[in-house]
Image (tube, helix red, strand yellow):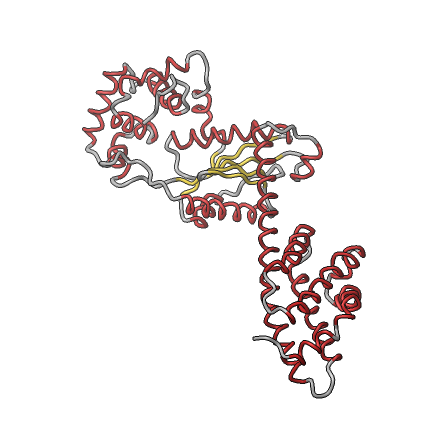
Length: 413
């Protein structure tokens, strides 16, 4: 609805005061806002004063043209993005705009003469109608810019941590200072442990794990990160992807015995953890690789989810190292590569300390069926599981197949 002639006349009487009002806002009115006094003087005198001046002129322009278009908010958006990049709190930015509106209302009230109360109400209505559009544009731009900056900072930190863990970034003093590392560290490899598929490990679907969705995985890993931070009393270097990750504790310490239980309770799934020590920051990449390998071997060996160290899988770790004999040992199981039920039975049998009855219970089989499968496996492979040497060869063959130390394309069960 167009303004009355009286309202337009009242607004025009404020036009000569535009520069004065802008200076008053930037140097007097806004000074009462917490944190404003800490801003640099040139920001106040140039950028903030210019923005205030633009705001007053934009309002006066709307007095003559109720629909000036969206271009008038462009400067406010640009300034909001600048303030976000500079780290100015959003509440300070919004309160300055709200206070600027109040200063403009005071100027209109002072300019109003007796009998112009109706015109003053019209201008206040216009002022309040446009104010929410301004605040919305400012808040939206600020939040978008902060989100982009935070995402950029997170990705940069992830890149630093990734490079530090895999050894592609040299641990120079500047990097170590930024990461908060200056001495021994404890490296943790962490993985969510999927549940067995329908029918158990020997069920009709082959016992394949149920794969949780990506949202569930991300939520679980974030909860793991939170618990780790709380457990060790500081924000750790943490990097995860697809349900597995690494954390670096910047001191030599022992993980609590109940850490796996805490993590499992937090994310609602089994959690497996491996710990390896690094005597110095330069040793962190090797400790990271060791922890990853401990985690993998513990799973292959059938150890229950929990906290694992090198001593828990010392022999298996040694047996699974690559070497000239690796392909030959892995190939011992080639004759049963197409018999997943035999490989699964062997894996379970070895994980249960060669207890045929417990193996039968876990696989849902009769003990005689377990005996028959193991006899068939021995017949096809030549492995004597009744001898220490045959058992050691079987363990090594499984480990090497699972690490891909055999021929390319040879997979485990």
